[in-house]
Image 1 (tube, rainbow, N blue to C red):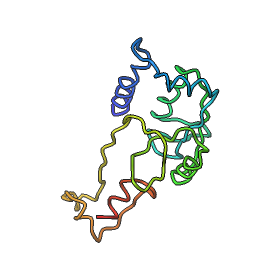
Image 2: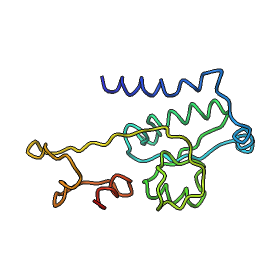
Image 3: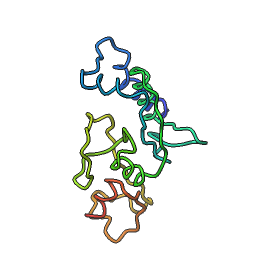
Image 4: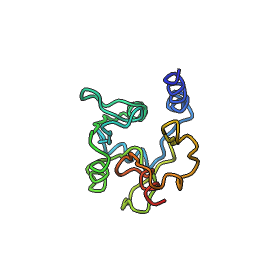
Length: 159
């Protein structure tokens, strides 16, 4: 059931790709004309958004980029790596596109940020005895598993 909801949400969000009202700006068209292919980040295991299974890039964001690139007439080359390595490659201009990325002060990126394409709601999974945790402050002195390099991990560590 949950997969169907994700799929419907994804399909609804991509309907603009098949709309007659969708047009690239002149700046976007100029950029597209200079490219035959684009290199795009793909994380190793950020399910269900961007991941690699048996050497194949998959996920909602991967599908989204493939649809958009087909519409633009561009070939996509997905580069799969860890988030810190992908961010480093993007900072060195070894990637054309990194997905997704939040605007953060510590990222030294002088690149274009698109409009938001993903809004993630975070959840905390706890033991039943800890079900009454309602704030980050209540996590103090608890043992946590966090994803290195993620904005959510940084937020929790700073609290």
